[in-house]
Image (cartoon, rainbow, N blue to C red; front, side, top):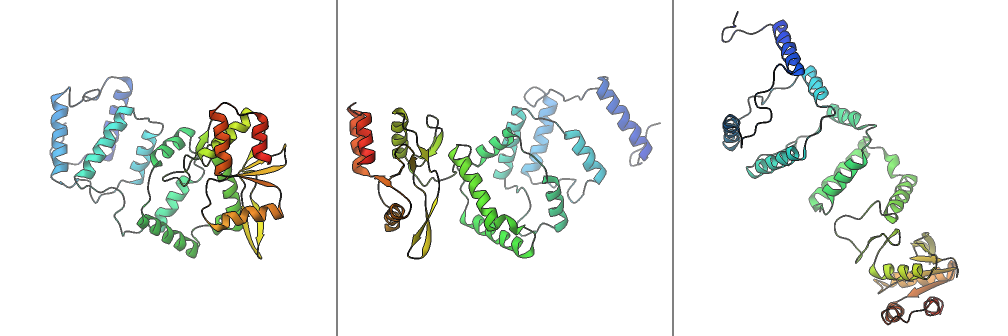
Length: 324
């Protein structure tokens, strides 16, 4: 018996219809009429697409606005999407749709000024705990954030949010303890020197980067050339081996030499120019308090490069520049 217009179906009937449809789709007895069709190949799909797009263009309100999914519906949606992977074409189409919506003035995410409730924060925290990102996921996140410039306004908001979190105890202060900062610094330095982590945005040093032939990061083209010369002549070195504490008129300052050559028990600092007087002072204090350090400045570097260009560089000449 057919249902009349406006007459609601019982829960039992809805359940039977749903189970029947699922079984038919599963066994292949029933297929979605639009499966495999696109607006380029089918007039019906094209018409539906145009009607939906027109609604977006005119700013029509979604019929679901103001309504909420039940917890059961959310669970079912979650289960049905687990393990589902979208094709590159689908991802591309979604990005294009979002771009068009932004151009039309659509706003995504939480409107500004509306705070996140504690209940929502707890749910977000619970869902993120124990989640391990795959290397592929990390790579995609890294690619997406490369070159991203954070505005002063965003930095200010982040700072205020962190301060509020520390004040209310929502954020664990232990991560910012002296020991916590030390551990973070060690991990970042290791990943930076091995090339696993690269600086984002504007780099402070000219031609800095990870050098495959050396197996570590360098801060300048001069460091790269000197390290390549040492390696080519079989002179082992350690790049930025250790950060040392120096006593400067009762004040403790730190200094990180560029290279350490164990063959000569010699530290090396490669410097094209000095940014301020403190940099010169650090080298002098290091020589007096820690050990022997050689400064490869502009003249020494140019002399080495001149030998190299004329193909007259020898082990003895390289050694003399380092030691004399």
